[in-house]
Amino acid sequence: MNQNGNMSHPDKQTRHKVAIIGAGLTGLTAAIRLAEQGVQVHLFEASTKAGGRTRSFYEKQVDCLCDNGPHLLVGAYQATSKLLIDCNVAHHITWQPNLQLPLWHQQRGTFAFKPKAWLPIQLALLNAASALPGHGKSSAIAMIKLASTFRDKMHENYTVKAWIMHISMPQLLIDDLIEPLCLGAMNEHIDTANALSFRQVLRESFSSHQQARLGWFNKPLDKALIQPLSEQAEKLGVSIHTRSSIRSLQVEHKHDTNNPHIDIQGHSFDSAIIALPAYATDRLLGQNPTCETRVICNIHLWFDQQFTFPSPFIGGLGTTGQWFFDISSQMIDPPHQQGALRHLCAVISADQQNIDDLTLVQIIRDEIRLIANNQTLNPVHYRIIREKRATVLVRQQEIGQVLPDALIDASERPKPGQLPATIESAVQRGEKAALLCLSRLKL
Ligand SMILES: Cc1cc2nc3c(=O)[nH]c(=O)nc-3n(C[C@H](O)[C@H](O)[C@H](O)COP(=O)(O)OP(=O)(O)OC[C@H]3O[C@@H](n4cnc5c(N)ncnc54)[C@H](O)[C@@H]3O)c2cc1C
Image (tube, rainbow, N blue to C red; front, side, top):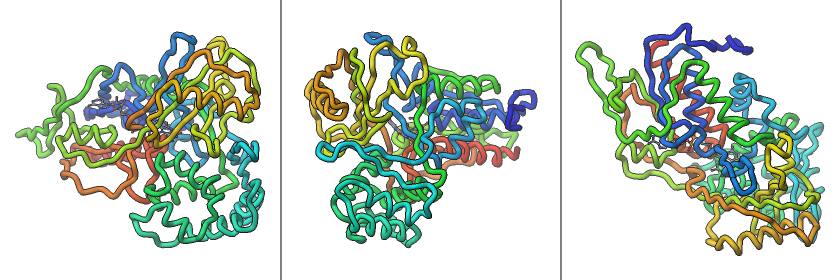
C-alpha cells in the first residue's frame, strides 16, 4: 500500500488485461488507477515519451529543460491534487496563499484582483472589483449580479458574451477580468465561449473562496508531473509502450465467452480505454471529425540580464501577450539545473493573429520592457511554440457511434457545463474511465 492506502503493488494482479491508448495525463491517470486494483495495463503512446500536451523539451542553446507552455492550476483541482499526493509529488506545485490575479496596464501600472478570503463571497467580489483602479460602483454591482446568476437556469448554447450583456456589465470589467479569465480558462473569446462551462470554472474558482488560489509547477512538467506519474505507473506493473501509434482496433467475438475482446497490434485485451483528444479518437474510430480546437501560442524568451518582474505571472491588459510567466522565479531547482539565463514566457490564447516570429518576439520584448520597467532588456534567445490543437472546445456533441462495452472513450470532448480542456478534466476523465472499466470487468 502507498501512504494513502491505495494498492501499490502488482501482487494482487488479476488476469484482466487492459490497453490504454495515449499516455497524456488522462491515460497515465487511468493506468495508475487500474494498476492499483491489480489490472495488467499496457499503455500505448505514439510519441517517443509520455506527457502529451503537458510535456517538456530540452532547449540546447540555453541548456534548459523547458515546457511546451506554462500551466496554471486552480485550488479546486481536487482530482489532480489527490493524484499528486498519491504519487508523493504534491510539493511540485507552488500555491498562492490566497487567490490573487496580478494584472498590468500601461497607464494604471500593476494591480491585482484579490477577493478577501475572510469576507462572504458576495462582499469579497464586490470589494475586490471596486478596488481595481479605474473601477467603481458599477463594476462592484455587476460582480454581485454575476455571482447571483451562478445558479440560474441557462441555455446550453448561451455564450459568455450573451451572459454578461444580460447583466449589463461595464466594458472595463469585461476587458480587465472577464475576457482575460475566459481566454485563460477556456482558450476561447467571450463571443463564442460557452457560458455554462465558464460559469462552472468561476464557481469552482471562487465559490469556496476561502480555499481559492492559483498554483504552478515548480519544476518543468517532465520532472514535476510526467516522470513521477510514469514511474508510479511502472512501479505498479504498467507496461508503457512508446513509439506505438495505434491506428486501428478490432473487436473480436470469441466463441468461448460472451464478452468481446479488443485486438490491438496482434494482442488481445479484455478492455481498451481511448485517452486521446477527440480529433485523434475520431481518426482512430474512422468517424467524421466532430470537434473544434484552438491554438495556444507560447513565446519563450531568455535574457542574460538580471531584472525585477512584478510577480511569477501577470495578466497583460491591452497587450498582445495575454499572460506573462516569470518561469525562472517559478522554478525551485538551482539555476545551473534550469539554465543560467532568465526565462520568461508570454502566452497568447486562441491566437489568430498570424504575426511572424521576429515581429512577435519584438512586440513581446517591448511589452516585457514596459512591465518590468526596464527599457534595456533584450533577449539572447527565443523559441515560439504554437500548440495548434492546444484545446478541444466546449460544444454540444453529436452522438457518435455506440461503442461495445469493452471499449471506453475517455477522450477530451467537453460538453456545456463541464470543465473545459484542463489538467483537472484530464485527470477526472482518466479516473472515470478506470472506474467504468473496473465495473465492466466486475472487479
Ligand atoms: C500550451 C498549453 C497550455 C495549457 N495550459 C493549461 C493550464 O494552464 N491549465 C490547465 O489546466 N490546462 C492547460 N492546458 C490543457 C491541458 O494540458 C490538457 O487539457 C491535458 O494535458 C490533456 O491531457 P490528455 O491526456 O487528455 O491529452 P494529451 O495530453 O493530448 O494526450 C494524448 C496522448 O495520446 C497520444 N496519441 C495521439 N494519438 C495516438 C495514437 N493513435 N496512438 C497512441 N497514442 C496517441 C499523444 O501523443 C499524447 O501523448 C494547456 C494545454 C496546452 C497545449
